Length: 356
Image 1 (tube, rainbow, N blue to C red):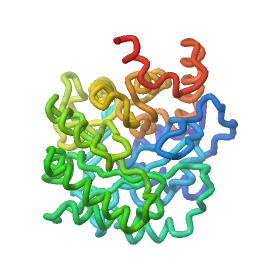
Image 2: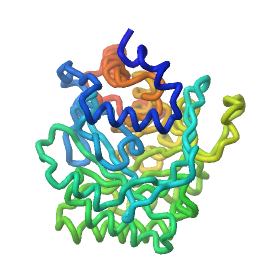
Image 3: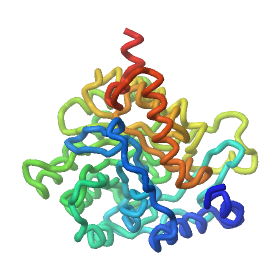
Image 4: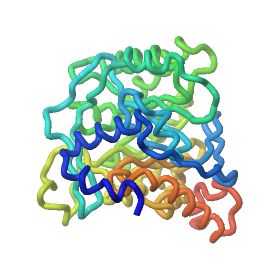
């Protein structure tokens, strides 16, 4: 039995948000064992102008304020994404706002971009060593009361762009009123242009790659519009997907009616479907980070075959603990060997090759 299995019954007696804060505290104080296995070179991915030791990343939402990103990376991740961060600190929505659906291996959250703001994050990252060992992404959001949303993303890009390996425009959280409306073609194009302009202003001719994180609850026309905007040149990639407002039949009745975004196992199939369609619409010209429901090497491999270049997870850690990252990497290598592939890159978009 690993350490997490031993302490999980105690953690699960706590409110989910308190348990999350305890996990952050444990990481900050070195109480979570780091991964010690050397990285297998077959897992290496080169994308977004960066070298990733492996394709498995920690999704935004876990470390909103960049407090433990480096410690989290030591669990075996190839990259870590912090945030979402807003220009001004905000407390988020009223508690309770985080719910475990244990039978479904799922989580519902309506956190509402609770974070300490860009200045606090910038102060923590100011002395960040740029050794290239761990790729760091910064996920940007808007404050709840801001009317000119693009202005908030510009602030985040200017202040944090010089500190990031890549940056993310998050317009897909269901927990900030009006945010998802920014995924429409015209407002999205304007938002990307302004955010990219702010990055160039802050970083010069070689700004960090800019990505867009989208929702899974989109129509075919929405996806076509997003793909068209994405190919205009300012975006370096896409992240598919955020949490869903859908509620599949059969969810744990104790929490199924809670408002917010659903993540975890029920999101695997719909998020992978969106990913696959985006890869087709963009003709594989943009790297896509696949996220949603990943809890095994087979799940991660399915994302890669559907068109993901990289993969993220978060909710599965709640149920499986930090040892999950090492297990997924071992299982990914098994998938490569089964299919006679030498590198992760050979798996990207493989399903589309068999369709053609």
